[in-house]
Length: 624
Image (cartoon, rainbow, N blue to C red; front, side):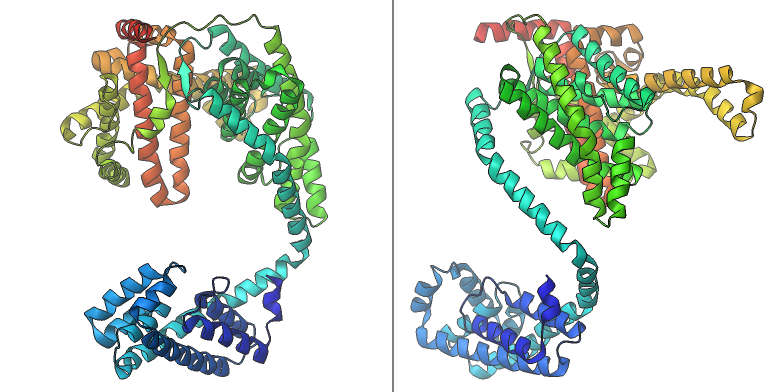
């Protein structure tokens, strides 16, 4: 864009007029559309490189003369010949639309069509082949040209100065940007062939494999051990100030052994646990851990764990995911710092050297992630190799996650039902619409549990409101222990703020912190238990949702399924709330993600109902 500053008066006017004249006569100029060319002229006006009066006069005459010549040429050519010329240029549709518009009304149609993007030039041609009177054509052409030129030149002039100022500020970073582009292109060229082989391998193995969760794919010991590895590793790094994260060994291990969904879920849950205990800002990075675990699970389908090149590939993939996704989160959470001393010092040094902050933040994050993911992958794969061989999977029920993510758009009138959910969310402050939305989500789960695979109609509003109220009350009751356990820490914190920490004693302060941490973990546990709680509500009503023993029994039917569905529901809620960046976004993303979560809860309820689980096992066994 540096060439914008080199725009010169007469030369620029001649070039712009020539391009506009060529386009107006009917010759396509795809590399320089008229709208953009006029906006560039406006930018030149803003930069003081062009006399505005001369520019506007010249361009007005050029466009008018070009349009007239285009009309006359089309009249001589005729409709049939014009269509033969337009067909290879893919302009037939635009010409036919312009013809229909002109046939409906004289000069007003010319004025309107000349202002519609994609029809401006074709209007002149259609006016010629339809033999519209020249005076009628001019009556619509001249005012349309005035509006068109004023609009786009004015737009360019209005934004021209900010654009030029931005270019001036970014000039010293141009070389860095070019180098980054070269690096990205080089990486793309180097990884294009391996990426094609990877996609071919996944296709050959069947794309449905990674999108399905088998109920016998993971055991309790593996999940708990993986969570423990992540927690212990990060605690070790924080305690001793190591230049590493060490929070993904269990994530990669779970992914390689049990598949992408278990790996991603373990990673996400680990970050929530760490956030509530030793690292308060770890929760937002749960999405990074989920992606790392999911990638490790895909590596399992590619058998990367069985060859040295696969180990290297998994290391590089996890490193790329962690560094690229963490960098913007570092800006949101920590001003660009990674939270590790080594990465933060590199970030400060590079910003002091006037490198772009985004580049400095990425390099600082990458300096930590590169060795961290190397140790993570090596440790996880060595542990995986030492584990006993898994037994051949039994013929059992499974959860089709691919269907969960697509069932909404496969439902009849799904857009109307989604917009109804958006309306309820928009009016949530009235409470009743929010209860209606929660109750509708329960109804989706109830229908899916019964075997339906589509969104239900919004035809039971009173029942939905009652379900929403009862479920929210049940979930609030489940969270009471977390609130009560947090009260001592709040009291102690208030006393500390008043300077009474010495009077309380360090042991009291530490004990209150431990109790608060237990309360936070309980709150996290309730989040993960939501699918089981909702399942109990659908099965036994309000009292069933509060039956702790029944909820635990349902979770124990298949701990892996419970963890995956619980984690996915939390992840989907998080993704839905990302739409808060734009209010309109959350009105769509939150209901859509909630409907997917309701489908997962409904399938979870069906699979953890013991009689139904046995029935599905028998049915699937008979089919196979």
